Length: 632
Image (cartoon, rainbow, N blue to C red; front, top):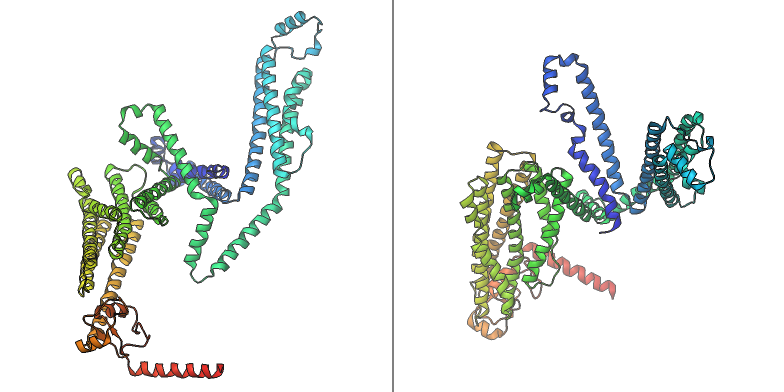
């Protein structure tokens, strides 16, 4: 949490306010709940209404101005720290000038209103040299409050002048004349030394000059920095071109994602969004405390109000998802510690959870959420977490079963997590408290996790049993394949059910563009791609089985003469298949090898030789001989 992150929060706050006001849309000009405007528009002809066209014109101007402000602060947000500090220095300098002018004008107004009938010029009176008589004179003239106002204004103007002097030196790296250090205090200092006939006109002139001169200095500095801004734009353009040239334009989407990730890390947007959302939450809590509404509500209701009011715009939802990503990262670290894994935590769980919640906010709308929708979002978030934990636990459990690790502690944690997936009673709790349509889909997801956990435990048990066998178990690969095929089939049918449920929601429920795009993505990745991959695996397996059956089996005499082990699994062979290159392998091991390539594991020759393969081998041998002849 560095200082430049705080500098980037201000543009986000401004953009958040623009989102709140809907960029000055016509709803802000003609609100639907304004009875006066509605009654007026119903009584007059809208086509001839000057007020109507005036409102449309004002709304159009507001939209343009809001868009310009949004673009300006978006550009300010992405500036480097050096230039961001310069821009803030200029903005603070302008604010100081305006504050000084406002303080001078307000002080002069108070002085004119209270003492316009008094003689404020002390040089028109005979000033006594005695201290007590001088104090009595001041008391007689009633200038105590007058002097207090002047003194307070002089102190304020001196402080603003010194601050302006410091900011100008910081921005331009050049010292300005010291006479400008107290330019703001000139109107307050001259008020007591001017005659009554001059005081009004001269003080107004001095006040205007004390404001215009600093503004002129700021404009001069901006003019000198114009070349710096031009160089900045040129450097950014060159940097983007260099980045595109590095990645090349083979895949435009991948290049855009890479550039976006680089800028995301450079600007430290995650930390900025987390700080912004924390400020929003503190603001909502203070608002509830001031209104004294928090005393009559439960903790869950307070948390719900803070969640809804703190996520009323797109920028606020981004902040909330950033906080969620941070929390999910540490949830993943906890399970990493529980599973005794030493590799780096996968950061995708935080990103996926944040993207999911943001899409849900776009679909359901963060404003005025009902309790059922909040519960749906929470359940989907829990489902993503369970899905991630399962995909971390499953490969670890299989690795432990294959590696024959004797440490019981390493086996306990994955087994407990699989038991958690089986006995996790969230669906039972939801069915007892809710009766909504989306609960059916979530229950099917929970059943799918239940079956996948049983699949993992079954495969784990088979590998543990095989590790305790002294002989080669030929049917192990078939059993593992059938168990995984059953789990994948159940998962595929559940994916089809969820797609049909989504079609029903789009047809008879509250489907939208975001929901439709999500269903298209689900249909492509979870239905079409899964079916295509499973079909390819089935074809490879079926082809490998046919190829293995075409090879001759070794007899007992051949095995006794061979007196060797399988070159793939390094186990003794009670049965084997003989390739055309006269090499011996287990049939199951060779079938696994054929899933990837048709070459022999030892001589890399094609096991199933055809005429084309023989011609290719002859050509390869000729080219190798020619190369050898050239070398010699």
